[in-house]
Length: 76
Image (cartoon, rainbow, N blue to C red):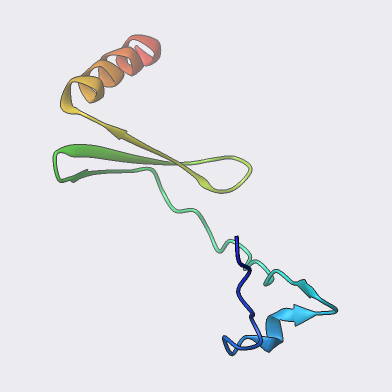
């Protein structure tokens, strides 16, 4: 496999002593509320996590109904 020459590609700022450095990650500004949206044929659920980030799950209508029933049985 041929390695691209980053200096020729106009990216010399990424080169440091022959090693490519990773850009700093931006801090999270908030994960937002629980969201459920219909996208195309699927249902997308975004659940904020305690340690940060979000769990994103895509379900079909049957799976969403089963999840709703299971949650109702637990909550009461």
